[in-house]
Length: 502
Image (cartoon, rainbow, N blue to C red; front, side, top):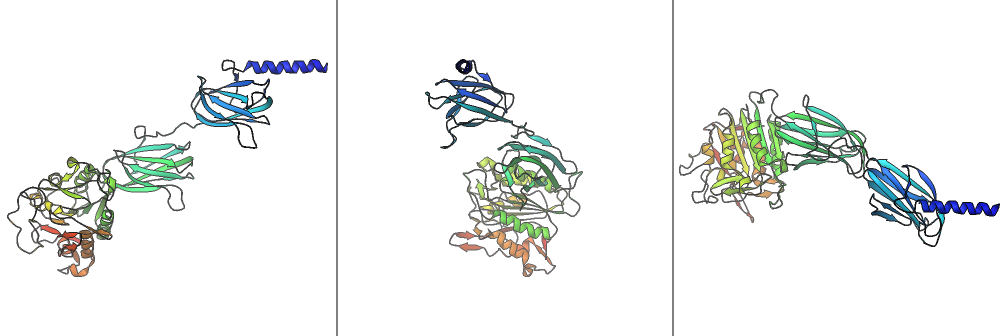
């Protein structure tokens, strides 16, 4: 009887081996289950079929003392992954893969074709959570502000998941975005061209991100991802502070409004970056804010040509005083002055004095305007060359109360402004460079001194005007790098353009 039972047992195992030894006869293997198996006789190969109804993480391995060799195949029988030993002390195979929905096969054999043995086959499958928010700007989740706020929950479902949100702003202001929750998030703000304007990882000991940026009207995108391998839920919160008052988009009566543009980081790799321009707008901005100015800053890659032109016309509405300050690259277009926005790539992408003059012409004639250009060749914004290229001699250079402007100036940007009461200050002549000296551009550093020093209040009215602050720079700057002669055009008659309270 013992002999008969042994023969039956052998016949059963042999039949089992033959039943699943090809792809066509593969045995069904349920997900998240285990199965006792055997390699018998020598040279036996076992095939198992699995059906995945969704994308997810799949793990399959053997356990036991048998030296197994495993492979994972797709529905066509193509080998996707192979594995031999977990370690020198563990001769089982183990395969892990992220798979899409479909049919897959596991193939198991003994490492040695002359050996047999028992093993247990184990698999585990974790479906990928459905993506709650799109991971591209085209598939971004649209947010609508209510009382200048918006909130939306989200989940970083798998490592590498990115959630993208879009918000459209009808006016300029400051946009703040950040998350709350226990997930370690990283965030970024992009403009309509997908150029990154700001990014942040942690807020101190809080692993949520928080960022803010001065923006103009338009569409913006906020991206949220987990830091490293972090996954989990979060809540995205947006807060928008308009620069102008709601309903009509005008500034309150008597408003003093400044648009400060400073560009260190240019988008194109062919335009060299600078080092002091953001410091310039921050330092000038601090002085203006302390004196009651409503300040908007466009820095680095957010200072595109379109953004600058839009902000000039939008922010100035209804203001009694408007100051445009620029620190960055400057150049010439023929006989004209031009500044280089963050997206400068060629002559057409420059912001020329003709375009700038057209934007300023939209401002009410009752608004007092002041313009400061801390940039190379900026003297061309006061006088153009009659021979082409940077002007060899500047046309105007006077502080209020001195001799009248040179009548020989031709096609003059400053004099052609279709507004009354303005001052134009440039960092240099039309054929000179503007230099960075330490923390600031040289001109800006001197203007900060002028705004901060009581002795420049020449009429002792406890207010420092653009004209008075310019006196701190009027002597010019000279070093081994070259000569820099700042220029001032005063077109507002005898009235000081008061800027800073001291």
